[in-house]
Image 1 (cartoon, one colour):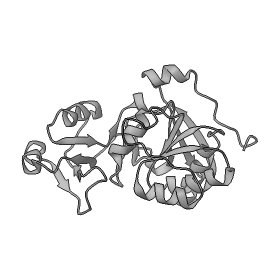
Image 2 (cartoon, rainbow, N blue to C red; image 1 turned 180 degrees about the vertical axis):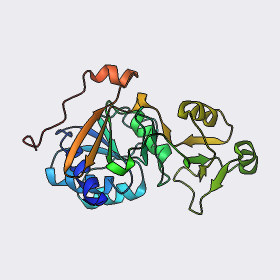
Image 3 (cartoon, rainbow, N blue to C red; image 1 turned 60 degrees about the horizontal axis):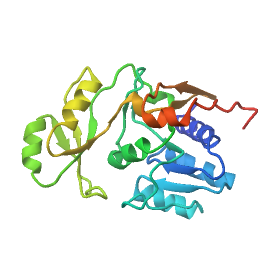
Length: 237
């Protein structure tokens, strides 16, 4: 079973969670690339928010309605966000941002009543390891790099928000501790550590089997949405 096949299966399963009339957050990356056509094929009436120009472009080409998430007049919350991950730990902590879109991805995940992570089996790890993606303020960049010490700049364009994309390369044992340190470092706009409190479900494909792993989500949006809906069985799909 190829990893690409697993990505497709996980994405197609997640597409079945989307219902007509929903406001949907669309992630970025190779697994989301399988989600977009699966959503388009269902022909639902959706309003979508994209986390990257690449996702927005592909979604529009497939006939999916994408609206802006910028400014004070944008939609304030989404029904569901579906996105991939680079690493998923048993605790529910994620590393995201291999594609450099983690700032937007985190904003869209936080705005959703339900954040569903779709991965192939190789993304499940015993513990998170570096690198951890970063988005850094270009102003004062040299001083920020000195404060962080273990960081590597990527040779890529600035983010849509004008941030410098980099990776934290230092070893760490506790993702929560590192997340707090990075968040409190002046010049760090965002990092790619996503806490379990953001995550509702992880959908993982292992060979031909697709599993749903529920993750405890204790924030206000989780309480608002109520109990997690059941994962659709193969007969439902």
